[in-house]
Length: 451
Image (cartoon, rainbow, N blue to C red; front, side, top):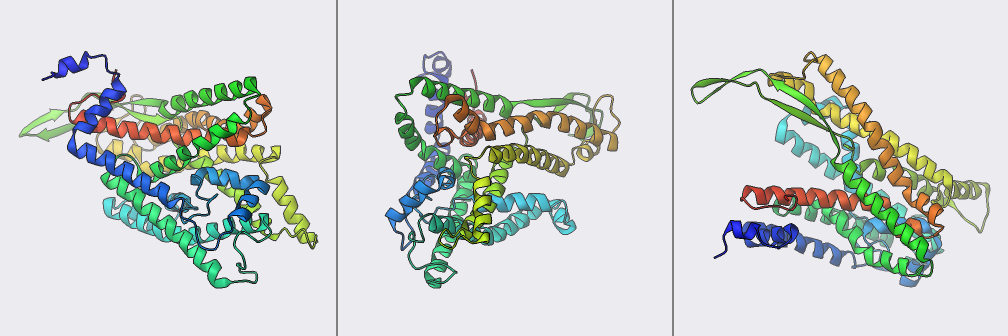
Protein backbone atom coordinates (compact mmCIF):
# COMPACT_ATOMS: atom_id res chain seq x y z
CA UNK A 1 0.00 0.00 0.00
CA UNK A 2 1.41 3.39 -1.00
CA UNK A 3 1.99 5.77 1.90
CA UNK A 4 1.21 9.46 1.79
CA UNK A 5 4.95 10.31 1.92
CA UNK A 6 5.68 8.06 -1.05
CA UNK A 7 2.84 9.65 -2.97
CA UNK A 8 4.18 13.14 -2.31
CA UNK A 9 7.61 12.12 -3.52
CA UNK A 10 6.30 10.56 -6.74
CA UNK A 11 6.90 12.13 -10.11
CA UNK A 12 3.16 12.64 -10.73
CA UNK A 13 2.40 16.33 -11.49
CA UNK A 14 0.57 18.15 -8.70
CA UNK A 15 -2.47 18.95 -10.84
CA UNK A 16 -2.98 15.35 -11.99
CA UNK A 17 -2.36 14.04 -8.46
CA UNK A 18 -4.94 16.44 -7.08
CA UNK A 19 -7.53 15.28 -9.62
CA UNK A 20 -6.84 11.64 -8.73
CA UNK A 21 -7.14 12.44 -5.03
CA UNK A 22 -10.43 14.25 -5.62
CA UNK A 23 -11.91 11.33 -7.56
CA UNK A 24 -10.95 8.90 -4.78
CA UNK A 25 -13.24 10.68 -2.30
CA UNK A 26 -16.86 9.49 -2.79
CA UNK A 27 -18.66 12.74 -1.89
CA UNK A 28 -16.17 14.89 -3.80
CA UNK A 29 -16.38 12.54 -6.78
CA UNK A 30 -20.16 12.94 -6.74
CA UNK A 31 -19.82 16.75 -6.71
CA UNK A 32 -17.46 16.69 -9.72
CA UNK A 33 -19.58 14.24 -11.73
CA UNK A 34 -22.78 16.10 -10.83
CA UNK A 35 -21.29 19.39 -12.04
CA UNK A 36 -20.07 17.77 -15.25
CA UNK A 37 -23.50 16.20 -15.87
CA UNK A 38 -25.30 19.54 -15.47
CA UNK A 39 -22.90 21.20 -17.93
CA UNK A 40 -23.51 18.40 -20.46
CA UNK A 41 -27.26 18.95 -20.05
CA UNK A 42 -26.76 22.67 -20.68
CA UNK A 43 -24.90 21.95 -23.92
CA UNK A 44 -27.75 19.66 -24.98
CA UNK A 45 -30.32 22.43 -24.34
CA UNK A 46 -28.19 24.84 -26.39
CA UNK A 47 -28.94 22.74 -29.50
CA UNK A 48 -32.73 22.49 -29.03
CA UNK A 49 -34.20 25.22 -31.32
CA UNK A 50 -37.41 27.09 -30.72
CA UNK A 51 -40.22 26.18 -33.15
CA UNK A 52 -40.62 27.79 -36.54
CA UNK A 53 -37.00 28.79 -37.24
CA UNK A 54 -35.66 29.03 -40.80
CA UNK A 55 -32.03 27.88 -40.46
CA UNK A 56 -30.92 29.38 -43.78
CA UNK A 57 -32.37 32.81 -42.90
CA UNK A 58 -30.80 32.54 -39.45
CA UNK A 59 -27.37 31.92 -40.97
CA UNK A 60 -27.86 34.87 -43.33
CA UNK A 61 -28.74 37.10 -40.38
CA UNK A 62 -25.44 36.27 -38.68
CA UNK A 63 -23.53 37.00 -41.87
CA UNK A 64 -25.08 40.47 -42.17
CA UNK A 65 -24.99 41.55 -38.50
CA UNK A 66 -21.57 41.29 -36.75
CA UNK A 67 -23.14 42.16 -33.38
CA UNK A 68 -24.93 38.81 -33.42
CA UNK A 69 -21.59 37.02 -33.43
CA UNK A 70 -20.61 38.88 -30.29
CA UNK A 71 -23.88 37.92 -28.57
CA UNK A 72 -23.53 34.33 -29.74
CA UNK A 73 -20.06 34.06 -28.19
CA UNK A 74 -21.51 34.50 -24.70
CA UNK A 75 -24.44 32.17 -25.35
CA UNK A 76 -22.11 29.35 -26.33
CA UNK A 77 -23.57 29.02 -29.81
CA UNK A 78 -27.14 28.84 -28.50
CA UNK A 79 -28.14 32.07 -30.26
CA UNK A 80 -26.77 30.84 -33.59
CA UNK A 81 -29.14 27.89 -33.24
CA UNK A 82 -31.86 30.14 -31.73
CA UNK A 83 -32.31 27.49 -29.08
CA UNK A 84 -34.39 27.58 -25.92
CA UNK A 85 -31.16 28.54 -24.10
CA UNK A 86 -30.32 31.42 -26.48
CA UNK A 87 -30.60 34.03 -23.71
CA UNK A 88 -28.26 32.11 -21.41
CA UNK A 89 -28.18 33.30 -17.79
CA UNK A 90 -27.50 36.95 -18.64
CA UNK A 91 -31.02 38.17 -17.76
CA UNK A 92 -30.39 36.80 -14.26
CA UNK A 93 -27.00 38.53 -14.12
CA UNK A 94 -28.60 41.81 -15.22
CA UNK A 95 -31.29 41.41 -12.56
CA UNK A 96 -28.60 40.69 -9.92
CA UNK A 97 -26.68 43.83 -10.88
CA UNK A 98 -29.83 45.94 -10.70
CA UNK A 99 -30.69 44.53 -7.25
CA UNK A 100 -27.18 45.19 -5.97
CA UNK A 101 -27.34 48.76 -7.22
CA UNK A 102 -30.79 49.62 -5.81
CA UNK A 103 -30.43 47.77 -2.47
CA UNK A 104 -28.44 50.60 -0.76
CA UNK A 105 -30.86 53.19 -2.20
CA UNK A 106 -34.20 51.66 -1.15
CA UNK A 107 -34.50 51.62 2.70
CA UNK A 108 -36.67 48.48 2.85
CA UNK A 109 -34.20 46.50 0.74
CA UNK A 110 -31.26 47.85 2.74
CA UNK A 111 -32.88 46.68 5.99
CA UNK A 112 -33.66 43.32 4.39
CA UNK A 113 -30.03 42.87 3.33
CA UNK A 114 -28.96 43.22 6.96
CA UNK A 115 -31.22 40.42 8.21
CA UNK A 116 -28.75 37.63 7.56
CA UNK A 117 -29.66 34.47 5.66
CA UNK A 118 -33.39 35.26 5.56
CA UNK A 119 -32.77 38.69 4.03
CA UNK A 120 -30.41 37.27 1.40
CA UNK A 121 -32.98 34.64 0.44
CA UNK A 122 -35.71 37.27 0.02
CA UNK A 123 -33.47 39.49 -2.14
CA UNK A 124 -32.55 36.45 -4.24
CA UNK A 125 -36.26 35.75 -4.63
CA UNK A 126 -36.87 39.32 -5.84
CA UNK A 127 -33.96 38.88 -8.27
CA UNK A 128 -35.66 35.85 -9.78
CA UNK A 129 -38.89 37.80 -10.20
CA UNK A 130 -37.04 40.66 -11.92
CA UNK A 131 -35.26 38.20 -14.21
CA UNK A 132 -38.52 37.20 -15.96
CA UNK A 133 -39.44 40.56 -17.57
CA UNK A 134 -35.77 41.23 -18.38
CA UNK A 135 -35.51 37.89 -20.18
CA UNK A 136 -38.74 38.59 -22.04
CA UNK A 137 -37.51 42.01 -23.24
CA UNK A 138 -34.05 40.71 -24.10
CA UNK A 139 -35.57 37.88 -26.12
CA UNK A 140 -37.75 40.39 -27.96
CA UNK A 141 -34.67 42.47 -28.78
CA UNK A 142 -32.66 39.51 -30.05
CA UNK A 143 -35.45 38.23 -32.27
CA UNK A 144 -36.02 41.76 -33.60
CA UNK A 145 -32.34 42.01 -34.59
CA UNK A 146 -32.50 38.61 -36.25
CA UNK A 147 -35.66 39.51 -38.11
CA UNK A 148 -34.39 42.88 -39.33
CA UNK A 149 -31.05 41.34 -40.39
CA UNK A 150 -32.74 38.64 -42.49
CA UNK A 151 -35.69 40.55 -43.88
CA UNK A 152 -38.12 39.06 -41.38
CA UNK A 153 -37.56 35.50 -42.62
CA UNK A 154 -35.91 33.92 -39.55
CA UNK A 155 -39.33 33.30 -38.03
CA UNK A 156 -41.98 33.65 -40.69
CA UNK A 157 -45.19 35.60 -40.01
CA UNK A 158 -44.28 36.63 -36.49
CA UNK A 159 -43.97 39.92 -34.67
CA UNK A 160 -45.97 42.47 -32.75
CA UNK A 161 -45.92 44.81 -35.73
CA UNK A 162 -48.48 42.75 -37.60
CA UNK A 163 -48.17 39.01 -37.77
CA UNK A 164 -48.69 35.86 -35.78
CA UNK A 165 -48.85 37.15 -32.21
CA UNK A 166 -49.31 33.67 -30.76
CA UNK A 167 -46.19 32.26 -32.43
CA UNK A 168 -44.02 35.21 -31.44
CA UNK A 169 -45.26 35.21 -27.84
CA UNK A 170 -44.81 31.45 -27.49
CA UNK A 171 -41.20 31.76 -28.67
CA UNK A 172 -40.50 34.51 -26.13
CA UNK A 173 -42.08 32.43 -23.36
CA UNK A 174 -39.99 29.43 -24.42
CA UNK A 175 -36.74 31.44 -24.34
CA UNK A 176 -37.64 32.97 -20.96
CA UNK A 177 -38.40 29.50 -19.58
CA UNK A 178 -35.05 28.33 -20.92
CA UNK A 179 -33.28 31.06 -18.96
CA UNK A 180 -35.19 30.13 -15.79
CA UNK A 181 -34.21 26.48 -16.32
CA UNK A 182 -30.53 27.37 -16.73
CA UNK A 183 -30.57 29.50 -13.58
CA UNK A 184 -32.16 26.61 -11.66
CA UNK A 185 -29.50 24.20 -12.98
CA UNK A 186 -26.78 26.68 -12.01
CA UNK A 187 -28.13 26.94 -8.47
CA UNK A 188 -28.19 23.15 -8.25
CA UNK A 189 -24.49 23.10 -9.15
CA UNK A 190 -23.75 25.73 -6.49
CA UNK A 191 -25.65 23.67 -3.90
CA UNK A 192 -24.58 20.13 -4.77
CA UNK A 193 -21.57 20.50 -7.06
CA UNK A 194 -18.25 22.34 -7.24
CA UNK A 195 -17.92 26.05 -7.95
CA UNK A 196 -20.45 28.75 -8.73
CA UNK A 197 -23.07 27.20 -11.00
CA UNK A 198 -24.10 30.38 -12.84
CA UNK A 199 -20.47 31.23 -13.61
CA UNK A 200 -19.74 27.67 -14.73
CA UNK A 201 -22.65 27.76 -17.21
CA UNK A 202 -21.21 30.94 -18.73
CA UNK A 203 -17.78 29.29 -18.70
CA UNK A 204 -19.10 26.19 -20.49
CA UNK A 205 -20.79 28.33 -23.14
CA UNK A 206 -17.59 30.23 -23.91
CA UNK A 207 -15.39 27.12 -23.88
CA UNK A 208 -17.76 25.38 -26.30
CA UNK A 209 -17.02 28.12 -28.85
CA UNK A 210 -13.26 27.45 -28.78
CA UNK A 211 -13.33 24.95 -31.69
CA UNK A 212 -15.06 27.59 -33.83
CA UNK A 213 -12.47 30.19 -32.79
CA UNK A 214 -9.65 27.79 -33.67
CA UNK A 215 -11.32 27.18 -37.01
CA UNK A 216 -11.43 30.92 -37.67
CA UNK A 217 -7.75 31.10 -36.79
CA UNK A 218 -6.96 28.42 -39.37
CA UNK A 219 -8.53 30.62 -42.06
CA UNK A 220 -5.71 33.13 -41.62
CA UNK A 221 -2.96 30.51 -41.46
CA UNK A 222 -1.31 32.22 -44.42
CA UNK A 223 -0.68 35.24 -42.15
CA UNK A 224 1.56 33.34 -39.75
CA UNK A 225 3.26 36.36 -38.22
CA UNK A 226 -0.05 38.10 -37.52
CA UNK A 227 -1.54 34.91 -36.12
CA UNK A 228 1.50 34.34 -33.89
CA UNK A 229 1.31 37.93 -32.66
CA UNK A 230 -2.39 37.46 -31.93
CA UNK A 231 -1.67 34.33 -29.87
CA UNK A 232 1.11 36.16 -28.00
CA UNK A 233 -1.30 38.99 -27.13
CA UNK A 234 -3.86 36.44 -25.92
CA UNK A 235 -1.28 34.76 -23.66
CA UNK A 236 -0.20 38.15 -22.29
CA UNK A 237 -3.82 38.97 -21.51
CA UNK A 238 -4.26 35.66 -19.67
CA UNK A 239 -1.16 36.38 -17.59
CA UNK A 240 -2.35 39.90 -16.72
CA UNK A 241 -5.82 38.60 -15.86
CA UNK A 242 -4.34 36.16 -13.36
CA UNK A 243 -2.12 38.88 -11.87
CA UNK A 244 -4.91 41.43 -11.48
CA UNK A 245 -7.44 38.84 -10.30
CA UNK A 246 -5.15 37.74 -7.46
CA UNK A 247 -3.69 41.21 -6.69
CA UNK A 248 -4.76 42.72 -3.37
CA UNK A 249 -3.79 45.41 -0.90
CA UNK A 250 -3.50 44.01 2.63
CA UNK A 251 -4.49 46.44 5.36
CA UNK A 252 -2.98 45.38 8.74
CA UNK A 253 -5.43 44.99 11.62
CA UNK A 254 -4.75 44.61 15.35
CA UNK A 255 -7.13 43.16 17.93
CA UNK A 256 -6.96 44.25 21.56
CA UNK A 257 -10.14 42.68 22.85
CA UNK A 258 -10.49 40.11 25.64
CA UNK A 259 -12.69 37.07 25.04
CA UNK A 260 -14.06 34.45 27.43
CA UNK A 261 -13.39 30.86 26.34
CA UNK A 262 -13.61 27.61 28.27
CA UNK A 263 -13.96 29.33 31.62
CA UNK A 264 -10.86 31.46 31.12
CA UNK A 265 -10.24 34.99 29.86
CA UNK A 266 -7.98 35.44 26.83
CA UNK A 267 -6.72 38.69 25.37
CA UNK A 268 -6.48 38.95 21.58
CA UNK A 269 -3.27 40.73 20.66
CA UNK A 270 -2.41 39.06 17.37
CA UNK A 271 -2.69 40.87 14.07
CA UNK A 272 -4.35 40.03 10.79
CA UNK A 273 -5.19 41.96 7.64
CA UNK A 274 -8.07 43.11 5.45
CA UNK A 275 -7.59 42.02 1.80
CA UNK A 276 -8.79 44.73 -0.60
CA UNK A 277 -8.74 43.40 -4.15
CA UNK A 278 -7.48 45.56 -6.99
CA UNK A 279 -10.17 44.11 -9.26
CA UNK A 280 -13.00 43.68 -6.79
CA UNK A 281 -15.67 44.20 -9.46
CA UNK A 282 -14.63 41.17 -11.51
CA UNK A 283 -16.23 40.86 -14.94
CA UNK A 284 -19.48 42.67 -14.04
CA UNK A 285 -18.46 46.14 -15.36
CA UNK A 286 -17.69 44.65 -18.78
CA UNK A 287 -20.99 42.81 -19.00
CA UNK A 288 -22.90 45.89 -17.84
CA UNK A 289 -21.10 48.24 -20.25
CA UNK A 290 -21.52 45.97 -23.27
CA UNK A 291 -25.18 45.36 -22.40
CA UNK A 292 -25.95 49.09 -22.21
CA UNK A 293 -24.17 49.81 -25.49
CA UNK A 294 -25.86 46.94 -27.28
CA UNK A 295 -29.32 48.00 -26.10
CA UNK A 296 -29.58 51.29 -28.12
CA UNK A 297 -28.19 49.55 -31.21
CA UNK A 298 -30.73 46.75 -30.76
CA UNK A 299 -33.65 49.15 -30.40
CA UNK A 300 -32.59 51.38 -33.31
CA UNK A 301 -32.01 48.35 -35.52
CA UNK A 302 -35.66 47.47 -35.07
CA UNK A 303 -36.71 50.80 -36.68
CA UNK A 304 -34.36 50.65 -39.68
CA UNK A 305 -36.43 50.25 -42.84
CA UNK A 306 -34.36 50.52 -46.06
CA UNK A 307 -37.52 50.30 -48.16
CA UNK A 308 -39.01 53.59 -46.93
CA UNK A 309 -35.74 55.43 -46.18
CA UNK A 310 -37.65 57.82 -43.94
CA UNK A 311 -36.05 60.32 -41.55
CA UNK A 312 -36.71 58.04 -38.60
CA UNK A 313 -35.12 55.13 -40.42
CA UNK A 314 -32.05 57.22 -41.28
CA UNK A 315 -31.64 58.33 -37.65
CA UNK A 316 -32.00 54.74 -36.44
CA UNK A 317 -29.43 53.59 -39.01
CA UNK A 318 -27.01 56.35 -37.91
CA UNK A 319 -27.33 55.24 -34.26
CA UNK A 320 -26.78 51.62 -35.27
CA UNK A 321 -23.64 52.50 -37.26
CA UNK A 322 -22.32 54.78 -34.49
CA UNK A 323 -22.61 51.98 -31.92
CA UNK A 324 -21.22 49.32 -34.24
CA UNK A 325 -18.08 47.41 -33.09
CA UNK A 326 -16.53 48.42 -36.42
CA UNK A 327 -16.55 52.08 -35.30
CA UNK A 328 -13.71 53.39 -33.12
CA UNK A 329 -16.14 55.58 -31.13
CA UNK A 330 -17.83 52.39 -29.94
CA UNK A 331 -14.61 51.19 -28.29
CA UNK A 332 -13.91 54.62 -26.76
CA UNK A 333 -17.35 54.51 -25.15
CA UNK A 334 -16.70 50.95 -23.99
CA UNK A 335 -13.45 51.99 -22.27
CA UNK A 336 -15.07 54.97 -20.51
CA UNK A 337 -18.16 53.05 -19.40
CA UNK A 338 -16.15 50.09 -18.11
CA UNK A 339 -14.04 52.42 -15.96
CA UNK A 340 -17.12 54.22 -14.61
CA UNK A 341 -18.94 50.99 -13.81
CA UNK A 342 -15.81 49.55 -12.16
CA UNK A 343 -15.64 52.44 -9.71
CA UNK A 344 -19.38 52.45 -9.17
CA UNK A 345 -19.73 48.71 -8.55
CA UNK A 346 -16.56 48.39 -6.45
CA UNK A 347 -17.50 51.28 -4.14
CA UNK A 348 -21.14 50.19 -3.80
CA UNK A 349 -20.20 46.63 -2.83
CA UNK A 350 -17.44 47.92 -0.51
CA UNK A 351 -19.83 50.22 1.37
CA UNK A 352 -22.30 47.35 1.80
CA UNK A 353 -19.68 45.33 3.71
CA UNK A 354 -19.52 47.81 6.64
CA UNK A 355 -15.94 46.80 7.39
CA UNK A 356 -15.28 49.62 9.89
CA UNK A 357 -18.38 48.76 11.94
CA UNK A 358 -17.48 45.07 12.00
CA UNK A 359 -13.92 45.88 13.08
CA UNK A 360 -15.11 48.13 15.91
CA UNK A 361 -17.66 45.56 17.04
CA UNK A 362 -14.96 42.88 17.29
CA UNK A 363 -12.38 45.09 18.98
CA UNK A 364 -10.18 45.49 15.93
CA UNK A 365 -8.43 48.59 14.65
CA UNK A 366 -5.99 49.66 11.97
CA UNK A 367 -2.70 50.86 13.52
CA UNK A 368 -2.50 54.65 13.40
CA UNK A 369 -6.17 55.10 12.41
CA UNK A 370 -8.96 55.90 14.89
CA UNK A 371 -11.91 53.46 14.88
CA UNK A 372 -15.27 54.38 13.40
CA UNK A 373 -15.63 57.09 10.75
CA UNK A 374 -11.85 57.72 10.33
CA UNK A 375 -11.34 54.00 9.60
CA UNK A 376 -14.13 54.01 7.03
CA UNK A 377 -12.71 57.13 5.38
CA UNK A 378 -9.21 55.64 5.28
CA UNK A 379 -10.41 52.35 3.77
CA UNK A 380 -12.51 54.23 1.19
CA UNK A 381 -9.48 56.28 0.12
CA UNK A 382 -7.37 53.13 -0.24
CA UNK A 383 -10.17 51.44 -2.18
CA UNK A 384 -10.43 54.36 -4.62
CA UNK A 385 -6.66 54.39 -5.23
CA UNK A 386 -6.33 50.67 -5.94
CA UNK A 387 -9.55 50.64 -8.00
CA UNK A 388 -7.85 52.97 -10.48
CA UNK A 389 -5.56 50.08 -11.38
CA UNK A 390 -8.48 47.66 -11.68
CA UNK A 391 -10.56 50.11 -13.74
CA UNK A 392 -7.77 50.83 -16.23
CA UNK A 393 -7.03 47.10 -16.48
CA UNK A 394 -10.68 46.21 -17.18
CA UNK A 395 -10.95 49.05 -19.69
CA UNK A 396 -7.91 47.74 -21.56
CA UNK A 397 -9.30 44.20 -21.44
CA UNK A 398 -12.57 45.44 -22.95
CA UNK A 399 -10.93 47.24 -25.90
CA UNK A 400 -8.14 44.73 -26.45
CA UNK A 401 -9.93 43.00 -29.39
CA UNK A 402 -9.93 46.33 -31.27
CA UNK A 403 -6.29 47.05 -30.34
CA UNK A 404 -5.26 43.54 -31.37
CA UNK A 405 -7.01 44.01 -34.71
CA UNK A 406 -5.11 47.26 -35.32
CA UNK A 407 -1.74 45.77 -34.31
CA UNK A 408 -2.07 42.49 -36.20
CA UNK A 409 -4.15 43.87 -39.08
CA UNK A 410 -6.41 40.82 -38.77
CA UNK A 411 -10.00 41.77 -39.49
CA UNK A 412 -11.53 38.94 -37.47
CA UNK A 413 -9.46 39.61 -34.35
CA UNK A 414 -12.47 40.77 -32.37
CA UNK A 415 -14.21 37.44 -32.94
CA UNK A 416 -11.15 35.22 -32.71
CA UNK A 417 -9.91 36.67 -29.45
CA UNK A 418 -12.42 38.18 -27.07
CA UNK A 419 -10.48 39.33 -24.02
CA UNK A 420 -13.77 39.55 -22.12
CA UNK A 421 -14.21 35.83 -22.70
CA UNK A 422 -10.67 35.23 -21.47
CA UNK A 423 -11.40 37.24 -18.33
CA UNK A 424 -14.52 35.19 -17.62
CA UNK A 425 -12.82 31.85 -18.31
CA UNK A 426 -9.73 32.57 -16.20
CA UNK A 427 -11.77 34.05 -13.35
CA UNK A 428 -14.18 31.11 -13.20
CA UNK A 429 -11.36 28.58 -13.51
CA UNK A 430 -9.42 30.16 -10.63
CA UNK A 431 -12.53 30.31 -8.44
CA UNK A 432 -13.44 26.67 -9.14
CA UNK A 433 -9.87 25.50 -8.51
CA UNK A 434 -9.84 27.46 -5.26
CA UNK A 435 -13.04 25.78 -4.06
CA UNK A 436 -11.79 22.33 -5.01
CA UNK A 437 -8.52 23.16 -3.27
CA UNK A 438 -10.36 23.94 -0.03
CA UNK A 439 -12.33 20.69 -0.30
CA UNK A 440 -9.10 18.71 -0.67
CA UNK A 441 -7.34 20.50 2.17
CA UNK A 442 -10.29 19.74 4.47
CA UNK A 443 -9.54 16.07 3.84
CA UNK A 444 -5.74 16.47 4.26
CA UNK A 445 -4.95 16.17 0.56
CA UNK A 446 -2.75 18.42 -1.52
CA UNK A 447 -4.68 20.67 -3.89
CA UNK A 448 -4.05 22.29 -7.24
CA UNK A 449 -2.25 25.31 -5.85
CA UNK A 450 0.15 23.54 -3.47
CA UNK A 451 3.70 23.12 -4.67
